[in-house]
Image (tube, rainbow, N blue to C red; front, side, top):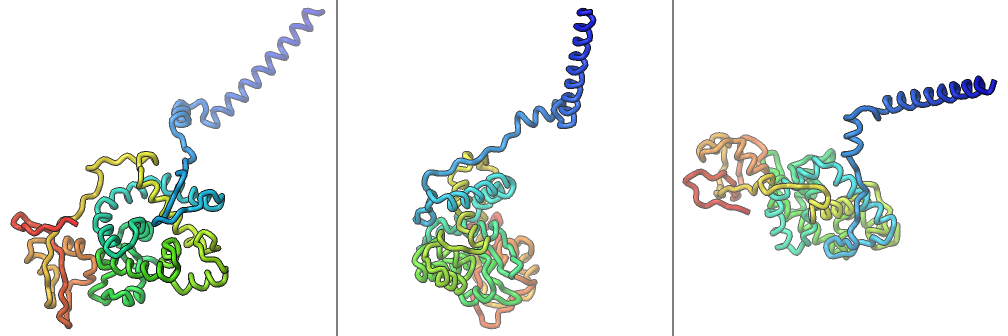
Length: 315
């Protein structure tokens, strides 16, 4: 009798173990746990939280990272820009071409070098057009551009002229710094406009960017700059490995001065041993197939060098 009872208990336990093992195996299969490919993925693909620098500054102004709201805002932008790898990798490549053009102009006008990252987050260093009609590297609106001395019409739009638009942006930022007393508020003014920022400062009765309650875009604005600056300061720490040959080279060209109208820009390009495409790529401020010049203004037009050209400019 005892043997039969023990045998029955053994069968019962065996059945329970079998059912448990079968259920567990099916569950693992459904989750991909039994798939060698899934096992390899799980063991080799990892996403990490990111370490923050102990100290951080923008244009020489200390960022109060000891505040949890500031630290979390910075963390958000650092994560977004680190793990949006294709976009940030393109920025690293483009910056090699355009920062050498932008940096000397900012320095000449007394603008801290950190503002080159403002152009980067505004346009990704492309000749972008915003839904509001802001254009170029510095995303300047038409009215603002004219106020800053840029020529804007059907044939010429100097918001697309990298050098001239950088000068215009510098003048705007210098004025904003004088108005508000800090570079962080100058950056906020660049994004939201002087009049609107002034109203917000008066209404909230504070004088610090980090103390302002702002719309999401402007609230994230300086932190986006800070995140990109942090990544660019040491790309490999953020996982970006770029060889010298991967970077986009600085454009080479020579410049000619023209003070008359050009009725046929494709023909003008051919006369100078190049194409209309190459002409427009070097001079994106040209907007049509002709360049009227009723006032006799002198335009400095960039042309790609040929084998016989010696006056090659490397910004």
